[in-house]
Each structure stands twice: as C-alpha cells, then as structure tokens.
Image 1 (cartoon, one colour):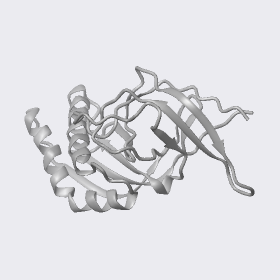
Image 2 (spheres, helix red, strand yellow):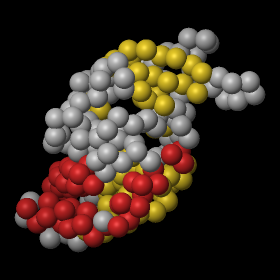
Image 3 (cartoon, one colour):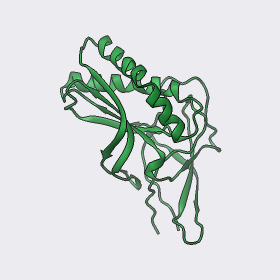
Length: 207
C-alpha cells in the first residue's frame, strides 16, 4: 500500500521564539494516534473586524510562547494537561498583556475543557472532527472567527506557505489491528520541546 501525503504546511511548533533546541531531520517521527492523545488550542476573536482579528493573532502568539515555556520537556498528554490546568491564570495574564499592549481592553477568558471541532483536511492529511480536549482562549465577546492548532504534542498550523517534506514513510500493522502510520519529516524549525510523537490522526491512505 502506498501512502500518499500531499500537504503544504508550515509547522511552527509550540514556542514561537525557540531556545535553539532542534529536532534531528532523521529522528523526528510523527505518529498517527487517536484524538484522546492530544490537546488543542482554540483562540476566539472578539469580532471579525480587522483590528480584532489582528488582536487574535497577537494573543495566539503570546499564549503559544507561554505554553511553550511551560511544556518544555513534557512527554505525556497527562503531564501537559496538569501543567496547563495549574497555570490557567498565568496564561490568561500573558494573553491579557498582549491585549493591553495593543491598546485594547477586551477581557480574556482562558479555560481547559472538551470542545467540538470540525474536520480539517489538508490534501490527504486529515484531522477528524469531534470533541477534543482543548485550551480555549476567548477574547471579549468571542463572536469572531477563531484559530486553532494542536498545542500538545506541539503541532501548530500557523499558515500554509511552506512545505513539510517527508523523509520516510512506514506503515506498521499487527494482525487484527488498525494500521499505524509513522512519518518522519525533515524539520527545519528550532523548538523548545524535546522530540515527542505528534498526533496526526487519522491518516488517509490510498491504495
């Protein structure tokens, strides 16, 4: 079975301002797990005005930077959940600082819970819709367009401007089990996390 990956993604992982730690281009592996193995980030803008949409991205950057610092070297979803839960007020304050720095006064709400997400597809790469654990950041009235990514394991989709090149693709399957797909990527990004499996489930395969 040939697995065809047609994605054009720029992956900026976790903390946007890296500390110099780099994934090996040969050792970085992304595993196809189920949705119970990840935590998403969901940022909802105050409105759809240009100002509020720009503010959404500023808040996003502040939260990703703060979360990246908190989750450095974390290797399990359970650890990440606990750390985020214990630092909700810290994350809210970092988001609030970003709002105030922009000259706005919108209140910020930061919660950790389970939320509904739609299916997202990028070529043959599909992240299934459903209820996911997520860190949800609401700005003001939270009536504008939202932004999301996979916060942990660190796989945040910030834009679609560049490629992520597969180095090796391998399918593993035990008798009577669903196939599990491992994709190793050449990853040029400096990130503050230790290498961990990244959730990209489910993978769509072609015969």
